[in-house]
Image 1: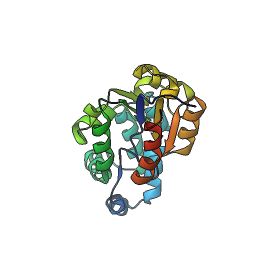
Image 2: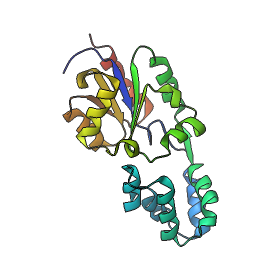
Image 3: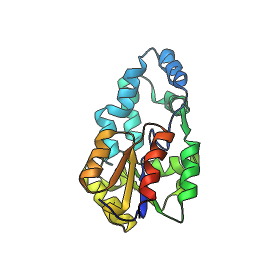
Length: 204
């Protein structure tokens, strides 16, 4: 596969932002008397989480089901969510890199995310303006590794798959992107990702 790179697609969770201090969520789990692994599974891996990821439930409906499964009153939800999400921090190195790449490359976000992702990017992390296109699974009704979402992403950016680099922390999503003809990098840490990205950007 060869050709000039014209676009770069980034994942959001565990790439653009992710958990900085595990102890914050651990304290929440201890406070309500539920193992943290169980909370994480309800928030990210439950049927309602999967439905919210493809837009079949709103984020509010998903959280209501999480609280019901935990046996907690809805009155606790704002405090619960505030503590749960306060563990997440922006990847400053990556955000700075994206700023440096803007103008030379089309920049997109390709994320399996719920209906409030635009709000999170804009109001919490203040990075929505870093991207030319936001392809969010809940909005388009498709989720990685469905091949159709990669086709949609390159279409939105008006580039060819071979002109695109995709960066994601999950190997299955990276492999699916490669099958669609994109260059793809599994994000393990910033230095490793940059070491794999730079040679692609320097291709003739």
